[in-house]
Image (cartoon, rainbow, N blue to C red):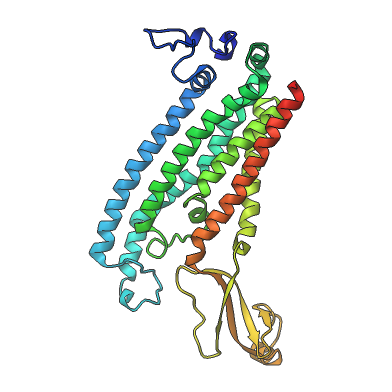
Length: 348
């Protein structure tokens, strides 16, 4: 049975009673009645999350040191398997060895951060309110002096603070690792599904969204397992939708290459479209002549003058990350407001 059933009239219960003089004069524990109760109820998940932060930070620091030593010893900083940088000539073997040695560790770190928002939504956000409503323990709390909005605020504020702190720390540590191991040398670029989703503010924003989705779904559905399913679905659907929108969150740049030029962008540029341009300046798709018997004759018939490539440069990475994170945080804020309105409508 949840400790909610032990609440007293002032919102703090027997579990928050004085032990060794730790009780404050106003009758609350050190964290306050409701906040202390929320900590008690979810201390296992909070402990696991904070331990993951500590372990992840140590692991990333060790990996960064080893990878930096390899890169410096083989002079492959900024080099890829096929590079336009003259100083990277003859480094393909060293780059291949680096990727074979450290690539799996980098992917493991990326997968951990990618799954973190989903795990937060499933095992913290979904049960946070749904478990109380399913067990009926919320009724006892709301018959006391604790108002429904204050109860909901207490139930969500502390988890949100813990999630914000933990995910920000992990994201910062991973970005520190990425400075050495990311992009060209590892072949895991900033614009990849894994790379973009785990850098900067993106995992922090999605973690807070997962918490908000779980809270609102639990409030509406009142069943823990069903809420977990809805939360999982939302945390798959929303990132997928924003991934389709991501290339267009900032103006796309375009490069044109003449018929005798090699059509190739810098290694860290995100190619989002390519084709042929005509003498009139029109753009044709790469497949415009796929069905033609004579490919070159077809291109001449369309007056193709060369190739073009639409792309997002690496300088757009952080603006794109902040824009997407802003969209996600705005969605989380809207869901939170809806949750409080639902609570107010139900309980006045």
